[in-house]
Structure formats: structure tokens, C-alpha cells
Image 1: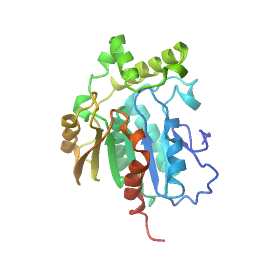
Image 2 (image 1 turned 135 degrees about the horizontal axis):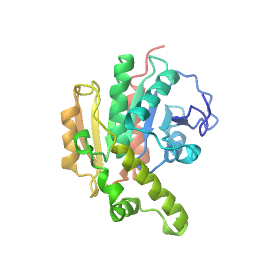
Image 3 (image 1 turned 30 degrees about the horizontal axis):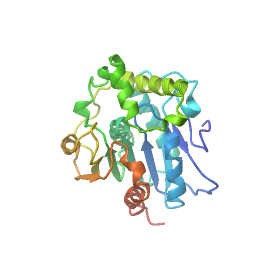
Image 4 (image 1 turned 180 degrees about the vertical axis):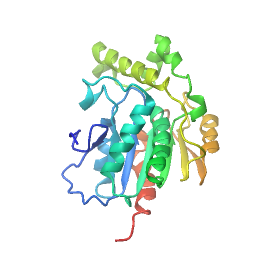
Length: 259
């Protein structure tokens, strides 16, 4: 596979940071929000150390895939990620999936596609600040057609304007527009709920995804469901990185097979 930022393949990015991996470590698969790249999770590997390996899912058109055209459909992206994931992970490697916002929807469908392909579920699926599948169909139309709403979604990120020049801002808006267009190709896949613990996390001050919307993920949980709210807004996970990683790592490490 071709190298990403520190390894993995085209759709998966990893950050070895000098660590010699055995290949048996638990894996945390992270999916960013719309318009964002996987590089934001590089610091998570530094915090996690050797406890588990962090992989980020990189859609085309950003960071190390900047020159590539957008994915044609959600189904294409999901199939490509699952193919690369199954090739990279041993069959008994514990896996936890964490998806933020649009990444939560992708993580949900990747988990179901992984089960359809291999018969295995992740140890846990965590959807953060993400609306459930039935709220996604056609929802991206507003972002594709409404420039003001697109800009509002970018402003929610609280990026430092001092370091965000107009050209960079326009590039980020274009990525958001791309991913909104991609979301319009979404068609719920698979049958039935997920067969692993499903956790819906959100920020108490998030005006984009409410606690009531997060609660509706319960309809997609087959094993168990839990809703948890953290202080902060739509990007709460970066305000609580260490505690978030402890929780995520707990699901992965406790499932490590005996050797």
C-alpha cells in the first residue's frame, strides 16, 4: 500500500512516532467531521503511546490526498476503507471505531460493512456529535445550496482567524461543500442494528447536534447503548482529549486477546 502520513495506506493514515508496532496492538479507528482531514488525530497517538494504535480515515481531496478527486459516493468510500482495514488488521485485533459528526455516520456504515465482509464487529462504536442515519438522508442539500450555512458550520470550529487567511478559508469551505455533496449519495446500508456497544457522545453546548438527536441512535443499537454528554460544544473531544482517549482505549485494551 502507498504510504500516508507515517504509514498505512491511501484511506488509512497512521502515526508511528518512532514506535515499533508488533501488529497485535488494539486499534482505534478515527473518522473526522466533514471538511476535515485525519491529521487532527495525530496527537492522539502521542497521548496513547503504546497502549493502542491510532488510525485515521482520510477521504480524498485533503492533506496527503490533496490532489485526488472527491469520492464518487459514500458506498465507494466505505468499501475502500473496509477493504484497506481488513488487509491491515489481524482477524483477532481488537478494534474501536470513533467517528465525529459526519465521521460518525461513516463509522456506523463502516462497522456494518466490516461485519458483512468479515463476520466481526468492532469492540465498540462511538459516534460523537453525530446525528443518526435517518437524519442524514438529503440533509447535506442545505450546505450545498446555502453558502451562509456552510460558513456558519466552519465558524463553529472556532479556528483562529489570525492563522486562517482567506485562501485557506476558501479551501476549507470547498472541502465542506465536497463532503456535503458526498453525503447526498448516502443510502442506509445493511440490515438491523449494530452488534456491538453503541455509544453516542456529545457536547452540552453543542447547538448543531442536540442530546435529543443523539438519543435517537438507540434505535440502531443491538448490543447496548449509552448516551454521554461532556462539557463543551461540537468539538468537545479536543477539549477532553486525555479522558476521551482513556475511555476509548479502555474498550480496545480490555478486548485484547490473550497471547
